Length: 457
Image: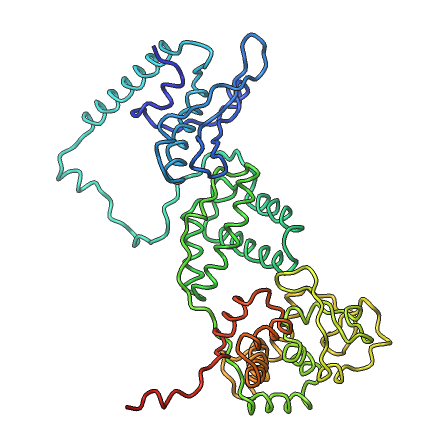
């Protein structure tokens, strides 16, 4: 006797795809995989509901486990449960019923399949020709084969369109991540969509998108830019696809199985005293707004993006403090040292919501995203670098590294390294001593004393 549960987990079943059938689909729900949120200690299974012939209502049927929970990796469990799900869907569409004995139906289907296969073999043998004749009938290729991926004609889509899926995931992230991160996500996911429209026109719905497509795109990014940029795209895609999986729009986030590449982080070189003075003197005449922008990075140790977020209301002229949205904190307060406070112009005529820095003046409105505001000053400084002959290893970030190094070495002259770092933490805003020490090592701020006497015999 065969029941539908035994048939799903049989090892040898003919694997022909069937077309989508709305009439049969009404009798049951689409089978789904329960993966316990990736917990391999729990049991995974395929589940579905079928319309009870007596009550006419959908009834949850017993779970299908098979051999899935013997496997110890997520990939293996998804593979075997995916096969069970595919088989179950096919059997349900063929008319198999979990409330009935399906033995006769299965024998009928099996005999029909074997008969069809035998007829196909006979026709093939009848129409066969000698090997030499067959070779003559083979047409010569008219063009060279390309290395492009061979894509099958996609089945009739049952999922939402690709762009709709991406927009849905972005909508769910808009209140979870920062504006700058959201803009980065949106830009990268739209670049992927545009690339797919150009190179894989048949990928129109989310169910058509496969790992090979994303991997091909990431490879192109790596070859045209850098491994680091490729990894950044991968991180964004993994986040977006996880949202789609969590909301049952896709079955599995395959991006997580794409390994990141080893990449060397970009090093922002520190400036020497002479180089820093040369830049400041040049900007006094050429671009005083950019100079004040850089001094907020240098003297207040803010990141370029954090300076772009500053508004007039964030500056407390009486207490000489400023508030800003830091990288890993909602809101942070710092003192404004006199060396910077004395550089500030009169801000009394500005509106509280005005940005402190705009392209042409200090204090005013600027309708642009955070990323575009930061890029504006980055491009202006790029012009300065070219004019003064600095390489790409020098950046706006380099000023932060330069002045933190200068401050730490000055403190370490009159105190122990631990005491100097403890004082420095209050100024730079690092949350832990470990984070500060790693930062100081990365920028080579902490150097040993001369050890020549130790090398002498």
